[in-house]
Image (cartoon, rainbow, N blue to C red; front, top):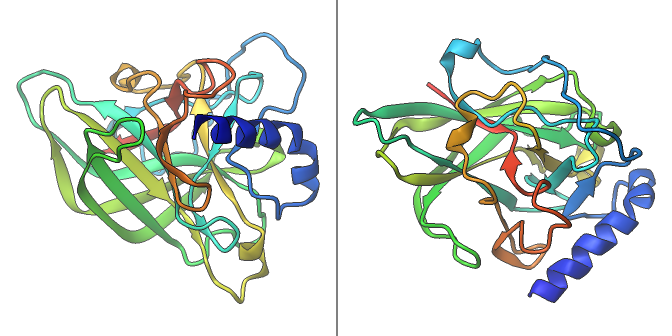
Length: 254
């Protein structure tokens, strides 16, 4: 399995320019295509779906000037179906209850014309996830999705903050680590974009503009995709370096 993932990741990196010209080439990852430069910071433009006071946790912005900026396949489209990245957060040991009502992911849409069709997001919440083990599902579902442009264009494609609310608010237990996913959809066969659309969930390398960002454990993102042949594969297993797979650009709302 590890050799297969290595081959897929290498092919994705080597074929990046070709994939940019032909959006029908599915990829597990998309990498920074600029020259290696110093690790600067991103713009403070968030594009988040709420005022900062409603944010319980935010891992931080992706950094478009960082050569370690990476996007990971995530979402459900006619080109790449039912693929999700599970990203982790650990509830603090403070003796109180933490209740969250919604999850948001920052992600790139390769298609620029009506990429969210239907405008519905799915969510998945799990515990006890490990390499090759998708753990215990606490809840999953779908609902109306908001998609707000962040103003950034990682890999030359527009980045959105996509948000979906849970059917019921979730209460976190002290010290417990939870894994969340939010996936956009493009499954309308009458929409030509969906046949070549792919979504990529962005990483964050400096946790810029993060809110309680230290609650996200390092190196705990997992890819689950029958399409690519992976069952909750830790994204750090074959990453070129630990920065690329350290943290995701995502968050939780009150």
